[in-house]
Amino acid sequence: MPATSRTPSLRRAVAAVAALPLLIGALASCGYGSQAPKETQVAAKGEKLSADQVRLGYFPNLTHATALVGHQEGIFQKELGGTRLQVSFFNAGPSAIEALNADSIDIGFIGPSPAINGFNKSKGKNLRIVGGSASGGVKLVVNPDKITSVADVKGKRIATPQHGNTQDVAFLNWVSEQGWKVDPQSGKGDVSVVRTDNKVAPDAYKSGSIDGAWVPEPTASKLVSEGAKVLLDESSLWPDEKFVITNIIVSQKFLKEHPDVVEAVLRGSVRTNAWINANPDKAKASANARLKELTGKPLGDEVIDSAWPSIRFTDDPLAATLKAQADHAVKAGLLEKPDLDGIYDLKPLNKVLKAEGKPAVADAGLGAE
Image 1 (tube, rainbow, N blue to C red):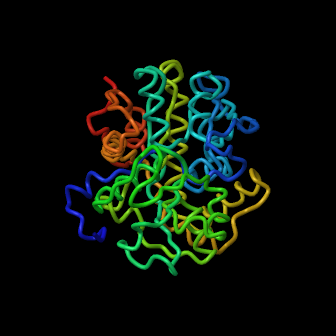
Image 2 (image 1 turned 60 degrees about the horizontal axis):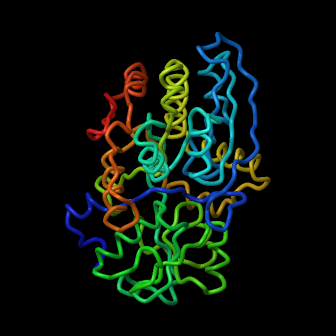
Image 3 (image 1 turned 180 degrees about the vertical axis):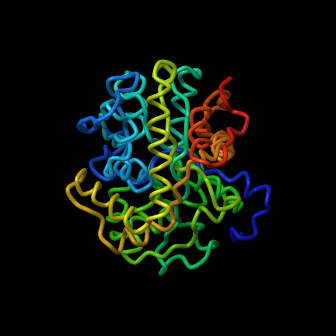
């Protein structure tokens, strides 16, 4: 059944879950990377806030471009004034959550699934989602010699980045809506789901070991550069073509002790997103320059020019889509029903948005009291 024939209720419910887009740099084969080296940025001139420093974590990938650009352009540090910005880079969501739990970082840019899992496992005590960052940037790309329609996906080998991650659950949900059956643990069934690290997906495609992939950018565009074709953009499955791919989280302890610092980082994020959206070409170049510094090699023009337009940078955490994706992770058998009450605290963000003359955002009934 083509995606365009989905009912509105199914479109609202579609699952986009949780883990992370392309992790440029070393990834462990299971997708659980280790913490990368830290970089300390010298504090800008100005009055110090309530903390001497804030430790920020993010990933070197395009769906974290708010962090890439905000760091590269010095926007975060400008808002922090005399409070020093220390940055850590991570290869996967679990290591970032571990760092937050271990008090090694204070604030992080992260996908929705690690945020849900971290909140759920700590029984709601370790983190809050305090802002949005990005939407979209996920596509089903396929070998055009083997797949020319949705119906052709049945019986093929389709890669997702990691068992239970954002794209894995989204694909399993989509498969279910086609009326096909797949065991969520083994990936075997009417479609073979091949869990493949994003960094090796292009080689897997070239070797013929996969027939396509449901993956984030820039992996999707890297596969296209190898001859794959886009069969489906996941954004087309969502109301208003929006779904959360990157959130901003903070440790509850840091939020309680240093609300002014959290507000400064959120103000930096809001102003970075505004700059990105007003200057897309400059922002794309800035993000790629940061990637070059982090990985030693920028993305090629063909890849980044294809990937960039599919990502939307937004302050709204799109809470209703996180709620839907959690429901579908449960439906897929990959997550026990979580209690997400209190996962959001959007008061600091809405304070920043009001000061910037922007509308408030909602928490879908999952806000902290």
